[in-house]
Image (cartoon, rainbow, N blue to C red):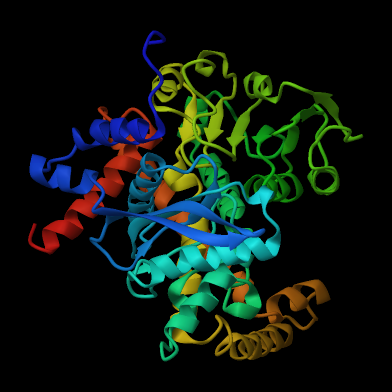
Length: 471
């Protein structure tokens, strides 16, 4: 096993696809149709910056249009290439199918180091990239809807949405051409935290399934579990924040680009994030011990490991030394196919990326629906719900002859606003998808892991969609 060459990210996705498809009753032709990307558009464009013309290369890949629009983020990174974008597009297809978001899979990327350019230069580059995609309907509210990814965020999504509106002045649903926008540009409350919050909900649901917990070698509840986080970006930070402040977990180590910090008594994530922003790294943080070689901390003893940064950080070179009982893939593809086999054979539970980081696309779906309906969630019913709760409490107090606590009243009278509804919808999505994966895994002796179960579920749903179209 260890003598094998390390598979690329795309090869890993294809190997996991092949493993799952062999367990499904599906024709070879349909299996091949699902596996391949429908199309990939490559654009090379020039932007005049700093007195010279600079040429950039970007991609937008559409993996499957069994449902439209297709959905998937746009990343800005020097690692961007066609193979990576197509693998991520495939993963988006399976992810959307698994959590029942009504999208096909897509992905985009621009080969660029965003740190080398000023904000006004990034805006020019982003708008020109968006222009090239928009004029080919590769950004459109009913055909192809991007979102933030590595190296992009609310700012870039606002620029893309504005560029779309400039080119489609009469499109009433223009805001729905992209998700992950700022609130004042059609965004939704809870989108920034969504992927990290989804990781929290996934772990909570995992610990409700005692047979899965037992298989991992752990026991009890989520409270007190020792967690190592690799990557304190948006996803890693929110996952660590919620797990430590709401579930009582201990974040015992955090790995970043410049090294790692360790504190077996637990790290204050908010203080660490402040330090990281101010100092561009974790070195010098007073609340933990610093280790220069961060990658070796992936092998440190812990209950739960959360890789939340790049692909392939757990691979053939280190898989046998990973001591975590549970790995939850907050990033896309952090465990290679070869490492997955080693860890699964060793009894490590891997909560797979296509499920674990689906919080982002789930809340993106909610934002897209909000943009199409042109009304924020909760606006029509929140006050009516609060009034009904008032009547109920008044009658309850009359019947029992004494008042209920003010704390209970305040919580009960509040009513559900947009954030509460978004979190409720996300939690329901994560719980339902996990239960389906669990049942698929436990009911078929040929399915050896949650990842295989997730692929089997997703591919079955995609195949059923294609069959309904007559393929």
